[in-house]
Length: 259
Ligand SMILES: [Zn+2]
Image (tube, rainbow, N blue to C red; front, side):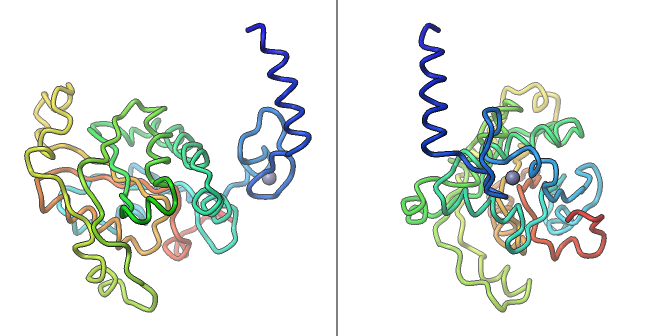
């Protein structure tokens, strides 16, 4: 504790030399602010999706047996605030932004009961090569933020990515799904079935494990769809879907002034 004043002095001196800036508007952040200034934080473009009912996210996965819930927090459009946050995280080497987004989502959706009965958080894996290049998995960073608030375990051993995303430009939804089929491989059925063993909910008779798949941006949903199909083909399970952001075209029909 006796280093407190010195640490504070050094940190404010550091801030004067290298001011921390809001990732959305570029203004200098004040002491209590992290990543985003207060003004930008209150105007982030929320999807306003209700995680308890049918919505634009869960609808993408209705054809997958075992689908329970799905939601995304922010609207993603080219160059909007969400775009800048995600871009800074992925290409500016800022995994802490992912943790920040994960914590925000947990605080927003936990009161709606979104995490009830979930046995494990499963971030969308990167290929080994991509992970080496970027140094971290952005979906895993988001999952860490969710885990901090909810206490749920993160499982990165249940599914691996064997192929990088092939180019998806100019393909229809069906073509995109075919294009990404087989890019993931799941752990063996016993490993999957045993996830959540020992948790009171599972003992009460919800025999199938419930995986919450975590993504940073849902653009077409094809990647997350392929991941869900891979897990479902390996063992019976329940599946929910949570993404920090959702590409705006999914929301055009009923967007409520989100931007
Ligand atoms: Zn700002």
